[in-house]
Every structure is written in structure tokens, then in C-alpha cells.
Amino acid sequence: MVRAPRDATAARKLIVLRVDVFKQLGEFSIDVAFTSEGRVTGLFGSSGAGKTSLVSMIAGLVQPDRGVIAVDSDVLYDGSAHIHVPPHRRRIGYVFQDARLFPHLSVAQNLDYGRRMNRLTRDPTEETRITEMLDIGHLLDRRPGGLSGGERQRVALGRALLSQPRLLLLDEPMGALDEERKAEILPYLKRLRDAGDVPMVFVSHDADEMRQLATQVVMLKRGRVTAFGGTEILPRIIPAA
Amino acid sequence: MSDISPQEWTAILLSIRVAVIATLVSTPIGIGVAWLLARRDFWGKPIIDAIIYLPLVLPPVVTGYLLLLLLGKRGLLGAWLAEHLGIVFAFRWTGAALACGVMSFPLLVRPIRLSIEAVDRRLEQASSTLGASPWKVFATVTLPLALPGVLAGMVLGFAKAIGEFGATITFVSNIPGETQTISSAIYSLIQTPDGDATASRLVMISIGIAVLALIASEWFARRATQRLHGN
Image (cartoon, rainbow over all chains, first blue to last red):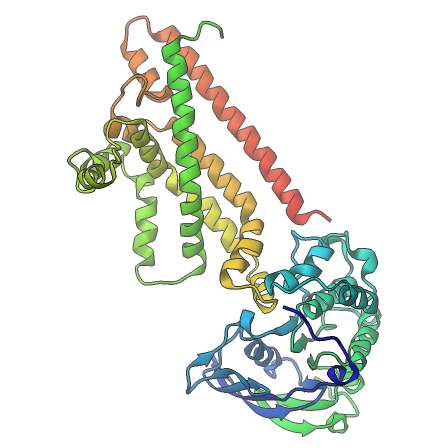
């Protein structure tokens, strides 16, 4: 597979993410519909709002009970048409809250994993660009076990990016980190957004983070969309839990 | 131990060959079965589960007899295999390997199954979002992470296979040079007047093989664990 060179137009490429799903999870249900064209679509809500379940459905790890999920004209899930594209064929990168680096592989092998699985040709320029953007070049020979939380997340981010996804899901990538470590990640995410080569879905319960990163916001509460719009819809004061 | 007789050597080498073949052939099957039991739900799973563990609870002589009924020269499957594929198990060393494989299978499968169950499914999910098909998820994440369990299963299976007696002697008898393993040689020697000295030498040898296998397994397991969690 040969990749088209990155030019200015490619770098600003947007996608349309269409989600309209229903899923019953015990007492709780998710019934969410939105269409987003943002470079960074924010899913905002407190814990238990259904953010992670929703992101898992977009990734294909959880199958909705009914509805539609589509990226541009590509239907990834359609309940009535019995379409459920498995995760490995969706080309959707996923950065988990807990990084999930492969403990038996070195950082370099973790980063290279997606390329190997997708049988992409090696692209040293791109590898260098991403390892430099994320400042992980000095970690390549290390094992994930010895990395700090912030380093782990940056490697996870690099690993997802190097699999060349068309959409990147970031599920509270700073959620497991303390304030100091968060500052280790946020600038990289901004850099990534501004480099603009992959549209993102960013999940967070932190209005401040959301304001700094998202271009469009979907507000969720107990599995329902309560508001949709620009970052101005975010609460100014974080409500007490 | 220069006074080991040719007949004893034959029994020792045969035991090792039988146990090695039994283990090598059982391992891929055991990994597949362990994965199915650990990761998939299907109709009849409790039955499969029970059948696999059956050799552990049945008297070995019963397992051997069932093998004879099934795979003996006039057995249900044995006659067909002999006629169409030329494969004969009855009274051959391959039959001894088969009996040992069947008898050791539950011991082989159990640690593998447990170690596959212990592999973090979230890592498998991460692997699939990076483009790995279910088969590649298994080959690049599940299996390498379950490796210590696979090695433990192989060692347990090997140890069981090399000591197997009841099913083997029932199925393929006790033919020197063909199906007489260390265990059946010891059994014959104990029945023979003045066989005690030779028998005790073989006893020492089988203890030695068992100890070596255990040391080797410890070493492999430690290396595998280091490789998986090394920093």
C-alpha cells in the first residue's frame, strides 16, 4: 500500500461522522444521535454518561442493538441491514484511558504494530515525524513496564497514529493521570489537532480540557445527547458532582 | 551407569520418544482447545470440557480399553484407518504415544487455558483496533502472553506422558523394543526374580528425567515471565 504524500489539502481533510445508535446495558440505555464534521469532536459528560460505551461502538468493540454508524459514506454499522464491520477493518484508531501497550513488545515494536497488522510499507519520515511530535524517540528501546503514565499515553498515541487511521478515538487519554502528567499530554494533543492529519473524537468529563481541544461538542447525560454545538455550550463552572 | 543393558536403553529411549511425540502433537491441539474453552461460548461446551478431563478421572485401564475398542485392529476407527490410510496404532509405539497423549491431555490443557483466561482482553481489543484480525490477535498478543502457561502445560503433559502406564499397557501391551516404556519395563522387572537391581536403576533414571524436566520448566517459565514483564 502506497500512501499519498501529505500536502496542505490532505492535512485539512475533514470527515463526517454519523452516529445514531441505541444500546441497552442493563438498567442503563444509550440512545444517541449526532452528525459531526469537526476536526475534534468532543464527547462531554460526567462519568456514567455513556461516553466510553459510545466510543467502543464507534470502534466496533461493542455492537449497538440498532442504529447506524458511518464515517463519510462508509457504513460501519447498520442494524437493519445487518452490517457490523469488525474493529480490525474499520481503520479507526483508539487511544484508551489505560494506554494498553503490549507488555511483551518494546516501545518501537508497539509503535510498529499497526503498520505490521495492516501490511503498510514502512515510512521512516512519518515515523520520525510522529516520534518527534510526541517526544518519544528516546524511549524506543524501552519496555512499556518502565514508562511513566504520561510516556505510556504518548506511546499509545503514537501507536494509534502510525496505524494510519482515518479517525482517532481518544477516550479520556488524561483520565488516569495526575495534574502534572496531564500537562505532559495536552500540548501534544493540541499539536496533533493543529497538524490536522487525522480527525479525532475526544472524550472527557473535564470542561477545561474540552474547551482547549474540541472544535465541536456533544454533551451527554445518562446516555442521551443534551446539547450539540461549539465549545461555547460547555459549562463555565464545573458543576459539583 | 555403564552397566545399562541394551534392553534398558531401548526402553529409556522409547519412553522419551513416546513422550516427546505425544507432547509435540498434543500441544497445538491443546492450545486450540484451551483457546476455545477460554474465549468462546458454544453449544456443548460443558460436554467437550467433560470429555477432555475424563482421562484424569477414569481408571487408566478403562481409557486404554476404550482406545483399544476404538483404534484397535478391529476397532471402529482403527480398522478404517488401517485399511484406507495404512495407519495402525495397535501394538505399535505410535499407539503408546497416542495413549500417552490422551492421558496427558487434561494436564496439558489446563495451564494453557488458565493462562489464556488470564490474558488481558483489553490488550486483545487494542490489538484489533490496530488492524489485527482475530487470528493475528491470537498469534501476536494472546499466545505470546500465555507462553508461560503453554510451557507449564507442555512440561506437565510430558511428565505425565513419560510416566503413563495403565492406558498404554492396556492399549499396546508391553512389547520390548516396540511398546515397552520405562514404566512397563519396571513393571516386568518387578515380576521377574532377581529383577530388583535393574528395576531400581530404571527407577533412578525415571526420577532423574522427571527432575530434569521440572528444572527445565522452571527455567523456561522464568525466562518467559522475564520477557513478558521485563522493563
